[in-house]
Amino acid sequence: MAGVGQIKPTPDISVIFKTLATTVIQRSALGILCMVLKDTKQTEKWVNVGTIADIDETKWDTKSINLIKLAMYTHSPKKILIRVQGAEEQISTILTETKQRKINWLVAPNATEEEDTTITLWVKQVFGTEAIDKTVKYISSFATNTDHVAVVQLGNKTYKSKLGEFTGQEYTAAIGGMLAGLPLNISADNLIMSDLIEVDDIEPALGVLNLYNDDGKVKINMAINSKIKFDSTWKSDTRFIKVVEGMCIVVDDIRDTFKNYWMGKYINNYDNKMNFCSNVNKIYFKDLQPNVLSADYDNRIAIDYDKQRQVVENDGRYDPDELTDLEILSYPSGHQVFLAGDVSFANTMVDLHLVITM
Image (cartoon, rainbow, N blue to C red):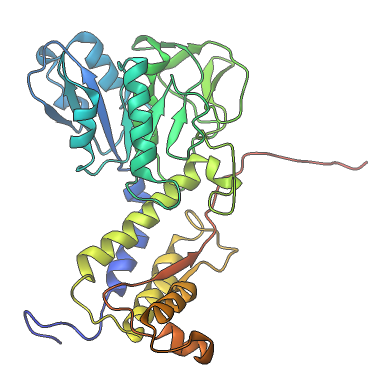
């Protein structure tokens, strides 16, 4: 074992990945909702709310109290991180602050349409388009044709709730709280919003999350985000919120493990890269099946062959065509670790196609 201050030659991360995998369902139900609120009474800039008991009703407007309670009604998140927006404060200032905080879902229930547009563009930027960066998702009732996995477009415009009547933008608080508190072994498809009495009837549309009235209950139709155009990077299943939530928790877990237990602590050589991949594949990915990853797929990460080939080419000392695959994979890559993954994320039953022959 290496002493204090020494670079460790061999990592031992199996316990970390085992813990992450076995607690993933519990942790997925403990998401953090960030809510941007305009309030005339509250003097604090940032307020943490863990339970309804944390709400000091003397310090909030009545509408704000109901919006906070709304976010905790159906499935309650681990906490609500409230950013109180000042009367003259620009939403861009708040977003700059928010980028430094760990959050899963973002809502702005009394934002203007212009502010909502700014938030939507910001979320698309920080989440990323080619790869996932900051794993924050946003719910909007104003946005249209967003076509992004991190933005949910809420379709219904009027909501009659046990807590009062709400506009579409106000009701994003309820959807955000529910999604932040929903465990990954289920989805929000056909989920009953327990606070609702009635919503306006709308026609389902691609890229729009809508609710519908069903015999005295109000349910979510399909729990989808705004993604409607698909390619080799964002396949058709990424329109489902559950799939993207699974992607985000895997990205966060692997990235956080690397940052907290690996970066700067282990020699960047072939054996250690393979050890890291082995722990992800045999421990973490295995235990994510079947609730997060499909149990019917060979989910794995490996050293990125194409990137390693570029390393050889850029170094200039060898012709990659004259090296074996193993020599390319084990070629020194300096401080950079290039890995590639091939996984299939699990989803719940949504569509039924049944043919009965008589």
